[in-house]
Amino acid sequence: MKRPAFKRILLKLSGEALMGSGEFGIDPETVNRIAAEIKSAKEAGYELCLVVGGGNIFRGLAAAAKGFDRTSADYMGMLATVMNALAVQNALEQMGCDTRVLSAIPMASVCEPYIRRKAVRHLDKGRIVIFAAGTGNPYFTTDTAAALRAAEMGCEALFKGTSVDGVYDADPKTNPDAVRYEALSFDQVLTDNLKVMDASAVALCRENNIPIVVFTIREKGNLATVLGGGGTATIVGA
Ligand code: UDP
Image: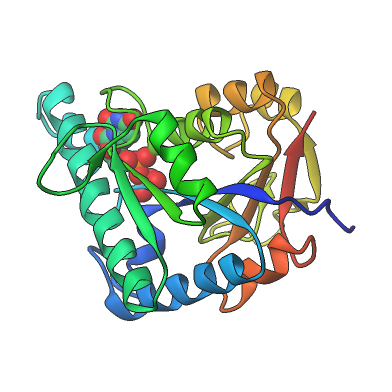
């Protein structure tokens, strides 16, 4: 099925996408490969917003389960997303792309604070805008941050780059009979509790009519294919 093409989009990269074949942290080769694909998308005319997760470094919920104070752990998770954002920015800038990192937690000597009007201005000037530190609030995820920023920036779609090529009715990593959905409605995702993004992110996209395209970023060249409406993915819409 050919999906619609969009112009201004938000690309959510999970922290795991930056690990490469490792089990933790940032793999520079993988970051460079993804950055090159983002650069190509920019050159193809897309207006790009990025939200980067932090799960490759620190997850608040996992740390809280081991006894950490949840709020402190979440702030640590948000700081992890800033490290990832800087890694992606560094790779993009080395390739000649103009970028800005905007953090929901102000840290003046590292990057700009998130100010919506400034972010819009950067986009208008052709810069790639990277949103760091999630929503700036504990008890949220970078999926919700992605939905929130997509709505704020007037993005036409949210592309979620993960390690799986769409949404399945069971975990394809453990169940060989799992079937991938081609398209889903927001309501179906929420009622069936499908693991697309967390419920608050899906609800935000539903309210603002922003379709979510789930695809794998692990496959080389896939970003361009999926942005063009082809390839393997699941689209969640109204
Ligand atoms: N986080 C948070 N508020 C936010 C976004 C993220 O507290 O608005 C914390 C939370 O602890 C989370 C961690 O940052 O576990 C990393 O983000 P996430 O798990 O969404 O990253 P991903 O799974 O996309 O790599």
